[in-house]
Image (tube, rainbow, N blue to C red):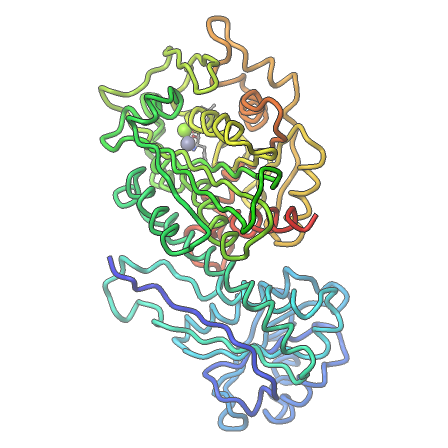
Length: 511
Ligand code: BES
Ligand code: ZN
Ligand code: MG
């Protein structure tokens, strides 16, 4: 397994895009008239090539669409990619991010090594963002689009280029420095997200609780403000983390609780402390309540919540907010075997609360509850957990949004704000008392499954029982974690949650 994934860099250069050399020049085109002056200019240089494809109906400039032209020596770059941006008035950060992503993705397809992303006045004027935000979004998009998971592909011809250089071009000297600032932020989140996708995409034979912990340690070694300690199975036993232990006991690889900690310079007792908790079931077979065979391979993605936390801790510790952040990743492999936990078992969790196991496939909540209790014990005043928790959430809201449940209005607002900033979409769902009632057991404090209906809500209601004073919110990313890739995206993980959680923490630190 080599370090074979494409390396992407993004730079900003002042100047006219047509005088710069490159394998691919990407230009944003609006679907409504009049054409932008840069587009007009390029059209002229390309012998009306842009007008022609528009007239033929080959390119309507809808968002997500693109059209490739060959410049035949008429400008410096050898190819031009028209990128549809839709109507001017509708331009937003998502269209821009997707546009940049489309450009680098096409570059990978064409085995082009350098891409010019040309900014023009109409983009800057139509989008309600400052130059720094535009820089961040373009860098994030460029990173996202250049990603392919190909570390197990041995055929050299099917591999993507080793390196892709993206250059954002702008004629306006006054915005260049702001764009550069934004790009440096966008590269941190964009690369953290791509690294997260790689770990998520790796199969269960490679990423298990022990190797995931090693991955987290490696990350912490590379960033001075990030620390990592790992509780192994012995320490989990001493601490009585019965939930994590129960889920992990059927696997040949023992469970772990990965504890990442970012501390800002000059932190005191009063520094606000946030906890991010991510479910990392490195493979979910269902355990004794075995899942059906069809599609079970997708359950290598059941670690996606934990990976989102890993990625966010990577970005946050480089962006250095003014709050302390814990990233807690309970990691276990849910397997059937002679040592497995069983339906009917009663598990004593770290909180002291007992849980009647009715289905070993409802394992996510069993590892999360211990980590949530631990987060509160570490002093976190706000705790956000994220998990590929329920199929029911996918039934309810589909594969493009994550469910958001919380008992705290302020936390809901903050997460929605982060969602709006990052384009990682959330949908608010309930988890109040009626759902908690459903999770009560006749022979223990709680049971790990509810009734037939509202499975995402009962799962969240279960988790809500494990904080006392802290604000708590839960993100069910089952759909996006496993099937989040849109047509045109690289197959596999989209690294959902990295941008969202990073923005949540960074916004929090500004308030
Ligand atoms: N990992 C699954 C949830 C899941 C399903 C994520 C499909 C992504 C796609 C989780 O551990 C699980 O199996 N949940 C059960 C809970 C049930 C037994 C109460 C489910 O959703 O069926
Ligand atoms: Zn699971
Ligand atoms: Mg399960």
